[in-house]
Image (cartoon, rainbow, N blue to C red; front, side, top):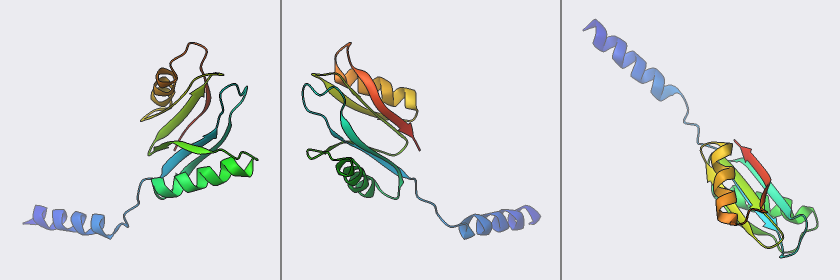
Amino acid sequence: MKNVKHLLAAAAFALAIPFQACAAGAIAVDDQVGDAEPGYGFITGADTREEAGKAAMKECRKSGNKNCQIVARFDTCGAYASSKKYSGAGWGKTQKAAEKMALEKCGSERCKVQVAECE
């Protein structure tokens, strides 16, 4: 009976702690074929992926970019890689995993990671 009281007390305590949603991130880029450096907006810490996408677009446009597009929405880590002709975005549980996916999707040995970050 004593163990049941402790278990119930622990459960009540756990339920009293407010639920904290995972933060989300997004990457928006303005990267045209032939650009030496892409313009981008990168956001982490948003409440939802939708909010992260809107904030990334705003950040991308704030830098004077006119053709921004969301290339990735993620929960943990995100990355964007590009070359003058190719580009790719990635996400994953670690920055290394996100960068690896971005480089694989980019598809050229000339691709390099332009931006990568984790929550």
